[in-house]
Every structure is written in C-alpha cells, then in structure tokens.
Length: 445
Image (tube, rainbow, N blue to C red; front, side, top):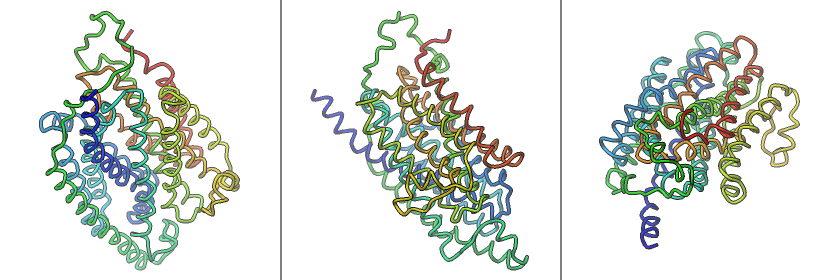
C-alpha cells in the first residue's frame, strides 16, 4: 500500500510535465488547420498542394519513428523530451527563411522537422500515460491529456488568425488573384512576413521549456510498474505467452493499422474543414478547425465522465467508430445552403453558424475524440518489455495523417470537395473492425 501511494506521488511531476507536452502537441499540430488555407494563398497552391503541408508533417512520423525509438532507448525518456522540444524549435525557426522567400519547399522541410521533433515526444509521452496506472482507466488518463491537446487545438487557429491575419480582410485565393499583379505580390509578401514574429516567439518558448526540463529529475519509465488487471493471458500455457518479436502481437499490429486510418480521418476532419469552408464561401475559414477541436474537447469530457464508470473503453471505441460512419454518411448527403444543424446545436450561444456540411465535418471531432485514448491501451495491452517498441510502431501509424489528406485532395479535384469525404468511410470501418474484434486477438491464427 505504501509503495502504491509513493508511486502515485512520484508520478505527479512527470504527469504534469507530460500534460504540458500534450498541450504543445496540440498547439503545434492543429496550427496546420489554419496554416493550410493561409499558405494556399501565400504560395498560390492547388488544394492538393496545400494539403502537402499536413502530409509532410505527418510523414515525419513514419520516417522517424524507429530512429527516434532507438534514440529513446539510448538516452532515456527525459533527454529525448528535451531533444524533441529542441527539434520542434528548429523547425519553427525554419519558417523565417520560408516566409521571407515565399518558397513552398522550405515550408515543407520546416514542417517535416517539426513532425520529427513531435515524433520523439509522442514516443516518450504516450507510454507514460498508459502505464502509470490501471489499464482499465488508461483511456481516462489519455482523455485528460487529450483535453489539453485539443484545447490547444481550439486556441491555435484562433490565435493564428489574430496574430497573422489581424489587419487583413477577405484573405482567400480568389480575392488575391483578382488584384493587379504588382499589388498581388505586395499583399502576398506582407502576409508571409506576418508569420515570422509568432513563429520566432514559439521557438523561443520551446527552447526555454527544453532548458527547464533538462534541469528537472524525472523517474525513468522503467521505474513505473504498470498495473495489469486484465486476464487475457493468465490462463494461457507458457508456450503461448512467449513472444520474441514485436510483430507477434496481433493486438498491436492491427492497432497500428487502425491508428493509421484514425489519424487520417482525424486530420481530414481538422485540417480540411478550412479549405472546404473557403471553397463554399464561409467567412474566416482559418478559424473553422476550432469548431472540430471544440467537439473533440466535448468528446473527451464525455469520456472522462463515462469511462470506465458507465462504459468500457472497448465499447467507447465501438461507439466512436459507428458515430463516425453515421456522421460521414450524413455529410455526404447534406446541403451547403442550410444551416439547420449549426442553428440547433450552437446557434443559441451566439457563435457564428455554418452550412450543414461544415457543421457535420466539425461533428466528426466528437466521433473521433475517444478513438486515440481507447485504442492506445488496447493496442499496448500485455506487451510487457515490448512496450517502448510497441509505442514506436503505433507512432508510425500517424503516417495516416500524411497519406489520407492527399487522397482526399485528389478526390476533391476529380469530383468535388464534399463528395471526396467518402474516403472517411473505409477508415471508420477499419476502426470498427478493431473495436469489435481485432483488439481481442493475442496470437495470429
């Protein structure tokens, strides 16, 4: 009993630090939702090209996950977190030459560097949250971190719009293209230069945080004994319990596949809503990501209240997948003329209403909210000594955020932006398969 109490107390400082890191994850990640339509104007991009901003960011996860896991094993969790913050700061500083030159490829390189820093931070932080307490309540702990993550996601596009677009009006690709050539170039340069001060400020803040973190003593993850109360392997013969490679855990491999599709649908819901809104004439489209993030925060709050008291994390994942399928179907059938859904849900608050199709994209945030918190503990269950490598494999699944938005962009170009959202349906079907069956497997058959 004393050991458990001591362990709980000793975990408070690292959990508070990781909570701050999750806020940083969210802020840096969901800046993309506002950055994409902004850079479409600054760099004169097509929709598919603009979505490469998100793709380069998430592509870093699949390229760098295993190398970063090796660094993690070599230098430990605390040093890896310091390194990750420093790498993100370097990527943020890369926006200075990109903005000065308005060179799209420099923006892409900077995004890749930022994604690389986040890769090592995510690989280090998520196992802490999963293993610091009982497995059954891991989803609730991750939900707390998710509240900070998505709370930052609400703030990021709003602050971006205030910092970068303050003083500008009617900023969209069509409006810029209507200006005379000389005036057009001046406007683009002025817009691009607006990025420099906020990105330098963020870089300095992260470097200060990295310096502070390097001076704090954190317990290594190996010192935190995860409590296991599930009975998946207790009655199995020893020969069936011995695993020699990470690929012998079907719950992990299938979990990584499900995570790939989850991050894809999450990024599409969060990062394309601005482009889609701009394409149908919604004002202040750079703020629309905040709507999706707001519903994700609501989903996390529901998860905190309901898991595991009223619903298991397995059932929460099932409900999330089915809700995603239902909302996507309604999105494909919805109207751009009606604002009925937004009027009913939040019109009474005074918040600006949006067309039904935009409101349904935002509502996907509610369906998506509890997928990450519930999927991680299910995928890492019973991994034991393989947990760090398992975490790296799951982090690689974030590559879905690199590929699926590009597919969406090509579908939007070939048909139209609204009908291209059918790409979400197979993603939610894969998540549903994992929720109903895949997570229960402990051996390949």
